[in-house]
Amino acid sequence: MRVETSDSPASAPLRRARGRPRKTVHERDDGNRRQELLRAAARLFRQQGFGATSTRDIATAAGMRSGSPFYHFENKEALLAAVMLEGMQSALQRQAAAMQAAVAQAAAQARTLSARECLQVLVRSHFEVLLGPDSDFIPVMLYEWRSLSSEQRSEINRLKGDYEAVWVPVLKALHAAGELQGEPGLARMLLFGALNWSVQWFDAARQATLDDLSECVMQLFLKRS
Image (cartoon, rainbow, N blue to C red; front, side, top):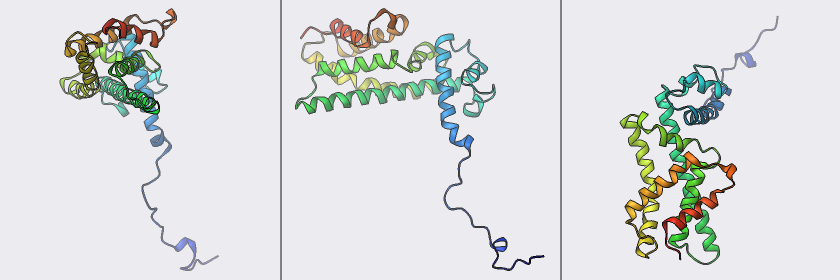
């Protein structure tokens, strides 16, 4: 029989690992699974409607067990609110990236963007949010707004206000220059109404591109320069 001394590894005290414990495989995958749920929910809420879509439907579409959505969201209403929040946060990021790219391109040409060019960038970005890849989120917000609680609406309205605030000085500048004849506040609401309605009728198979739509909007709302 081997006798272990105090110097042997078996008798040495266990060392506590430094830093945070390592995440399990499930924990590392948790963020991805949440995103899968959001994408599946957005797609089904848009196609079938909120009322006609069950959490079982969403779990199946995301390749999960029927009870898995409740690990991430308290109920279906919370999942709907999360879809809308994800949509608005993504829209804000896309809009900011589009404007930054346009400003950088103009700077490389040693010039500044005109108000007209700014509006065209905003319109094109908004069509991308509504009709481009992974575009189910904002249409769900347009269709299912009444299904939210007042508290949920308040948070999403704050993001919506941030999104539309970027358009306000652009429309005011166009109005001051005589290119936009309508009052900027009313023009903004009418403009968003027209753009948002495109989710009801747009069909990419008809060969109209998002650039075509953007150019048409500019022609309809602004005087020719």
